Length: 331
Image 1 (cartoon, rainbow, N blue to C red):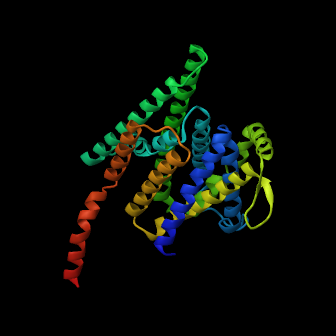
Image 2 (tube, one colour):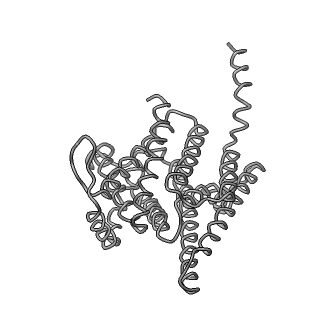
């Protein structure tokens, strides 16, 4: 597949996915469990048919390792979605999750005893400072919201702080999962399609613990106003339509990133994903009118500059002309 098509899938799928997630979360902030369950179920069914060949294909990586990976992956997914129910706005949610570089570097130093260049430390400092600014401005907005009493205002702030703690925990857990995955791939080779299937299929029994919450939100979704599907002439509750579109766009997003990793260098993948996050953030602010101050914009710029610095974009751009000249001389 042409790389341009893969880029289109990433932008179209991932940006649309964020839109439908926010449409759901604005109506019911606690709907993260049913959204996660639906996404996992869809990808697991698709993988069972096309990747596992209806269970006849044995995994290249032993299942016991997938169980460990899945426990972390399931926890990260549930905690990230539940944070939206703790007074965390969607823009702050997206910015905070961009701090995965920080978590990866910290755990890389602690667990793998890695050492990084000065530019890497500088990039992490920029990302950390940007997230700090956005977090502080969001905290100021939370405390300035009108409350019927000081006690209610304190409870609101407490839930927000719990949301920040949840996002921080999810970041660290995600980074730990990345390190574990990296060690597995070194030993058994890369099997990203297989990992995608098992990471979504094995956690499904865990959703039994969340069954009451999932059922309650399924009832609420069913009670939402009807929506006429374009061209098909079929009606369905609008929140079920949003959930269906969220599932489809999530799958398109994942497939787009997978195709991109096979067709393009890792630098290109990082740039596309980073730019996609930035566009999703801007759309969320403008379309949904999420509160976003000048300080939020400054923090966001620091986060994305730090991310680009970490990927050494500037060096790659400067090296490209000299590489072309060298190739011409060889010819």
